[in-house]
Length: 136
Image 1 (tube, rainbow, N blue to C red):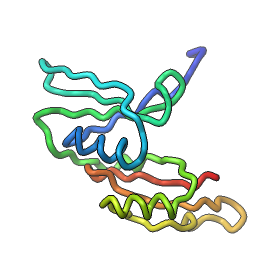
Image 2: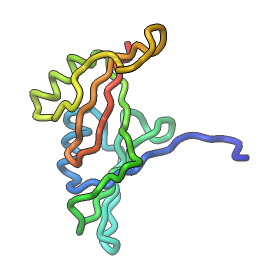
Image 3: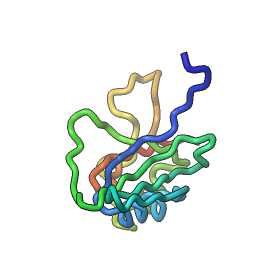
């Protein structure tokens, strides 16, 4: 058994790194923590997140230079981000041209005395779904 465990990152493949950075950094407020280019392998990696890699899980954006489009398959669901006010964040994102797939509201099919999260879903430039969860 590993003595110390921590989720490091989740990797997603993107069709255009600049377009993805505009979404995640420019619109969702993450920071680009580091970028590595691998000319011989024809790909770039950009690590983004809200906190430093030393103590926070981050997203690795992989840009394969010769690929512009990917299929997501049926197994991947979404990434989730905590926000203070889902309605306000969705309104700002819509003004910036982000597609809101599901408007803010309570989680559907939740029991009356259980989960009462206010959520919404938006879409990144490559069609990945991002769940926004209101966390006061």
